[in-house]
Amino acid sequence: MKAEAEFFFESDDLNLISEIYQSLLPEAGDPISDRSVITLKLDENRLVLNIQSDDVISLRSALNTWLRLIQTAFDVSVSSS
Picture 1: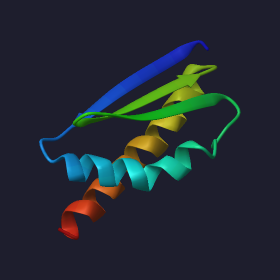
Picture 2: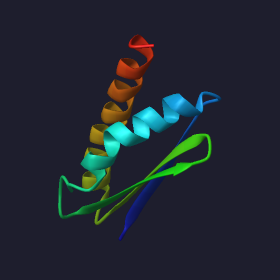
Picture 3: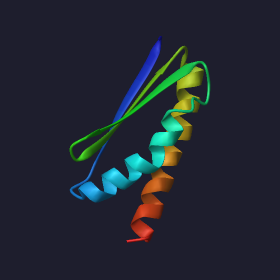
Picture 4: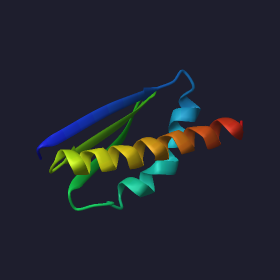
């Protein structure tokens, strides 16, 4: 892999982080592209998103997709509380 990015999303609300993780986990198992590998982990009170890509273009594409998915899951979880 030539390009990598890792993001940490933290919250004091463990239920919120867990809900977001559970809602996105099926997406992590279904790759969008053969050029990127997505890893999603739950680490205590934070969600860890790691993206490894063959090139910067595929990294940017995967980042756009996953950051939007996480934002949407967060918005849905917060609005339903």
